[in-house]
Length: 477
Ligand code: NAD
Image (cartoon, rainbow, N blue to C red; front, top):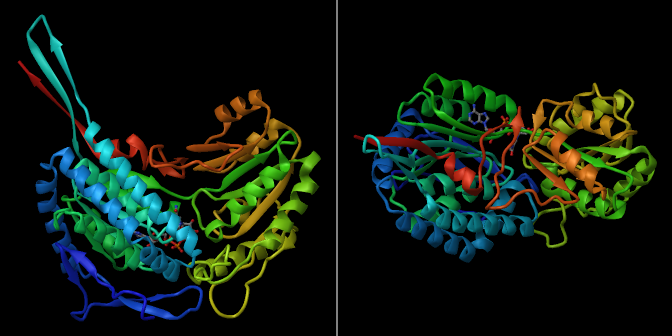
């Protein structure tokens, strides 16, 4: 498609492609049309990226906070200027509606602006010991070159997260973004380079994911792993990182519980949660997945959710009427068919959806299942798709036990007007982020991350910057 840019890697400031390298065909998930050929890194490319990141760290760690702030602010401005093009490329690569992709650009720009301010507030402290005249200086220094892996579901937002905090901290970065959505990731890095980031400080490579991560994590140059993706891959990468004691930030899967009590504003809960469920076709780590609904309002909730699911306009994300695009790759509708088929075989009730739409593109209908046995795959594995799973509960204790049943703990949601119950839920539900009568659980200034199998460490907020810094204390006699 003429509107789609040519593809390359960025290593040591150079655009790298061709040269007999293997390639990956990038495909538009709405049309299945090829968009471009992405060059994949060979071992020499990765060694060059490592060597550049090593040099880049030595340069960038000496930058002043004001210099880093100027780069981040400049990049934020460029992202806003380029928002339409970036969003269109993201929609072509990943399928999400153009409006959602445009919001993602703005969120990325907001994150860069936030870190431009935050990097000027990296403070230490000085301790004095009057008895011996000793002085101790506690300082925070950048952890070192970061290997960052960004998935395809937020083609712009994930790369912005992978680059923003490390660059603000004074680290260099080698980013491997998803091979499915490379133009978006390149657009984010290009904005930083155009705003004056030294060419050595950030590289973008693509490749066979397992080859790239093994190569980068085997190198002593890399001092931190930052990964967003599935729990199974996260555990594998954490083991590789442990071999060299690298710092890790892991943002992994979830299985978001949503507790809806009979005292809630049920219509508001339905409106907000149905829109939330089908955003990005459910391919969101903090998606609402297990709806646990008090039995008094259960039938009303299932009916209301089904009506809202049936009203969702599904189509090509470039069509302004579209509310939900295709799934991002052919693996997702296949996974939906398997998980939903397995649940229905076990007796779950299908209210709407449960099938692909059309015979072109990776479209899957917004789906509502209820009365799903807890031992089915879909009640235990992250579905990562446009399916709402609704089951009833009687007591608060029962609802909390179901919310905490799985080893995941990323985001959870609760709808209740009872303030004492709100406090109990806040204490009892095992997640990194809890939305009470709200789904606004992320922001540039708030920590984003999970517990248990959903990973550890945070992105965003001052905590995301701290995750790229290590303590160094100098004791002077
Ligand atoms: P996957 O688990 O193979 O890949 C997920 C991401 O990890 C991709 O971006 C991929 O490039 C990367 N990856 C995979 N193996 C890797 C490796 N060895 N080293 C480095 N990176 C690697 O599968 P998928 O089909 O792309 O996605 C399936 C599941 O992944 C989803 O069901 C969901 O659970 C999870 N996922 C989570 C997020 C998130 O935001 N947490 C995003 C995308 C996918």
